[in-house]
Amino acid sequence: MKKIFVAAVLLAMSCSKNPTEAKKIPQIIVAPKVSNITTTSADIRWETDISANSTVRYGTTSGQLALTVKNSTQETVHLIRLTALKSGTPYFYTVESENQDGASASAESQFVTLPNLDQIIDEAWAAYQDKNYSLSISRFAAALEQYPANVAILTGLGWCHLAAPVDSLIKGVGFFDQAILSSPTYPDALVGRGFALLALKKYNAAIEDLFKILSINPAYVFERNPEVTIEDVRLALAMAYFYKQDFPKTQNQLNQLAPANGLDPQASATWVVDAMAYEDYASALLAWLEKVRRG
Image (cartoon, rainbow, N blue to C red; front, side, top):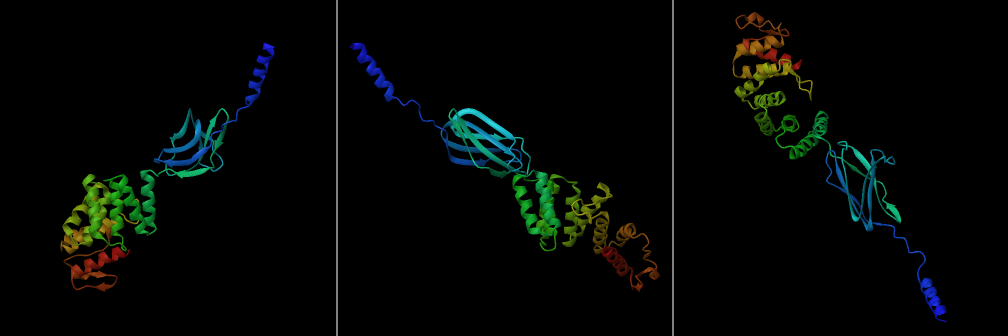
């Protein structure tokens, strides 16, 4: 009788247990968010309701997420750092959390890595070359916040402020000053400041900057605007000498620009430019400079 009672109790206990416990698959309760994006890395964070591992699948083409970073630690707050990324590049990604009962994954999302310095500068100059000077200035200014005192950025801002629609020569000189303070022989900054100082009628200072270019790079060409060459430097230098009434040095630069000009300060018969005779040498000299400027 006693054995029958014990067996009945054990049977009742076994029947009261759930033969299969419910599976607990982790659910994403806080959607993935990207932070700390740099030129080559990014952090992705999300949360699940129960502990699970962490996986990020990613790539540069939507639907083709061939790269994977995984953390096997079981946790509810998930953080994966992606490294060795390409700068200025869109990335697509999904996140996944899994435990012994199963896994859940997010929908595909996207982020873009920050451009590197060269890309930022190229984009700013592209806007400049499109004559979108306000956009160019904003791009250079944003870059300057990340890279203070960068000579190339300061020089770019200087040239933007020299552009006719902006026409802020004083600001332009200020940016060139900062660039030249860091790099005293930086050609693009010296040329830009020389042009600005000439426009501001500061002839001695303009001559000092422009004359340096003749020795630093006698074949100078402005990479960002190939129309600006050593001939423009010599022409600006000649104009500065002219307005100082230093006609011999003006003539010397003109001879480099137009060797066949034939002007002679002592021979009035030579004071002719394009069949127009001038009453004095200075007027003929200026007319030749204008002819060179017009090309």
